[in-house]
Figure 1 (cartoon, rainbow, N blue to C red):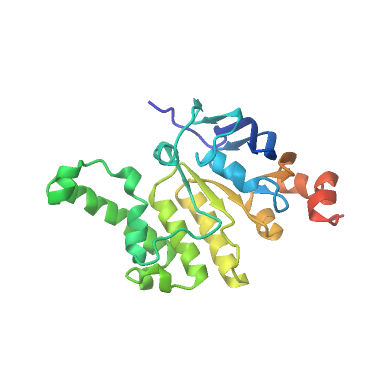
Figure 2 (figure 1 turned 90 degrees about the horizontal axis):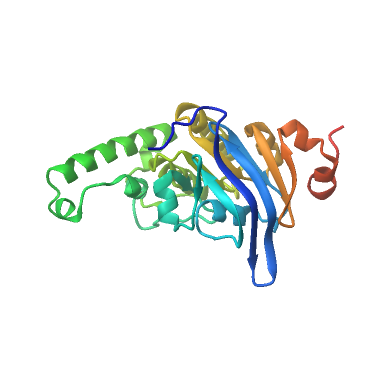
Length: 263
């Protein structure tokens, strides 16, 4: 039985992670932790290893060296669906929705890890399967209301504007009821108004659902406003780690990434 995590407890820790593709080192001996209930940002220049680290955490990549600890237990090699069942959900840098399906149906796919009835009951859609689907739909409808997307619930997502597709993808990740939500550049390509909306949703997810959030984002203003702590990567190595104030005033970060001092 998994021990209940409290705010401030470590929910995930990566220890001395190293990842290479052939002779190219994507990550080198990187360690950091993520606390229950926080918004944790991973930042750095292009090619710093940010998405690679998210892929390690979510099971898409398996590092050659290092350990991943989740919920107090060392995690062995796992496939992404096994990691998702443990309670880790994510969005992608490039939108990965089912474009011909409606918003509602896309969100329902996020419930797959929560479905327990066997194929027999699902096939006849009676008894347990019917009750389970009704419960899943209630959860998805709550997310639709939460994200303010009632008007597009039956619209194929391929017809939606980019910013709205990003919101639907967030909804699908929320539908999994994850303990840890990984957001890979959730505001990439958005205008100012869309970024403000997404920022509000991230904070509300963290506050209302109590979901721990880890995000990669290039908009430094957004990162500084949203994050409790920030880890900075550069050329696959950890450059700095701390609160927004600590990171923005770290000279190594200023030299390598921010470019100007805030003094």
